[in-house]
Length: 361
Ligand code: PLP
Ligand code: COI
Image (cartoon, rainbow, N blue to C red; front, side, top):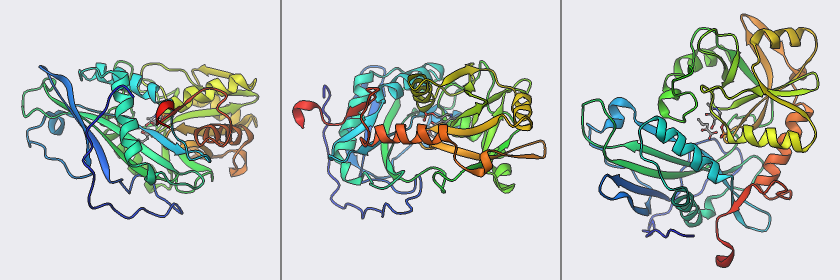
């Protein structure tokens, strides 16, 4: 590792949760990474400290104008006890794209990945072992300057916290139900849809709440202008198998460019599937469903991994997909991606990055 960080060890470590029935995002490890930014020194003073609440000035810009971004990736332990990350440089790149959109200073990609590696190394005993589990890594950045005028912050914190997790959808590989949202919208071209910032999720809560009340796990968002084309799912990208085509919405500026999405497209090509990134209208989906051609739907994301969707509701019509069972493409993608991530199958795509560099192992 190019960058080293001082470590203050937690003298009061917590008990680790059981990997059985592990929920998403409830438990946090013993340490966290924190680094400061100011204009004179840039990013500096990266350090690993015991996990604890932080102090924030009540006038901090993030609390008023939401200047914040976050990422999500995971660490896994292989059967040989090697700790590895999945495509972390893609998270670093996406962070800088988000930062650019939110006027947050750029961060060196090596520094970013080294911070994650260093923290995961300290808390590696927290990586859970059990189907669908992993150590979820949450890097985030926020403007902490106390100032009430509307402009970007002059100071920032970059932090990383870790959470041992099970599948995002409580039933794991059991298909979920999605509600096609046709009142609210998540993003429009020119907005922040392709950035990974907290504000996008705050703006989506209302629709999610309504969908939950109706018994749906998540929302399938339509485009923000005509509400005609499929965008993505609340916390994941959306894939469909229509006839023999595996299809996902093209990146149009308002969809998050998912790393799992990118990996599935690459794997589908590798395995010889016909795979397209294109506009998909909700009408095309409904027609495909009625013609018996909507074979599968699944969500893809770091938290969600690959999660089959068994039912889609649009304008009162409940469409049951693949008899509410996981389909062959979703299963193959889950097995391959999670297999590569956990080192249970060979990383033939060269996607994993060890946490300890070769000479340290
Ligand atoms: N879309 C949204 C809105 C998300 O929150 C996520 C999760 O990160 C994704 C897509 C999937 O992205 P990734 O595969 O990089 O986790
Ligand atoms: C992820 O998959 O990493 C996400 O960020 C989803 C999250 C909003 C729970």
